[in-house]
Image (tube, rainbow, N blue to C red; front, side, top):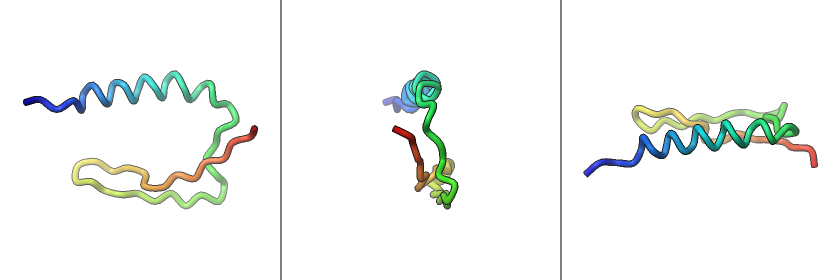
Length: 54
């Protein structure tokens, strides 16, 4: 049985490439304290405070 992680990575990459340029008022909060979590071979941002102008 094969896992779908390659497809999931490709879908995430495409989603971010398409969505982020459209979110021009999105930014990481200046007071952000980014927390990282480790899942073995992968490190992710466990917390990423964002701000956005309406």
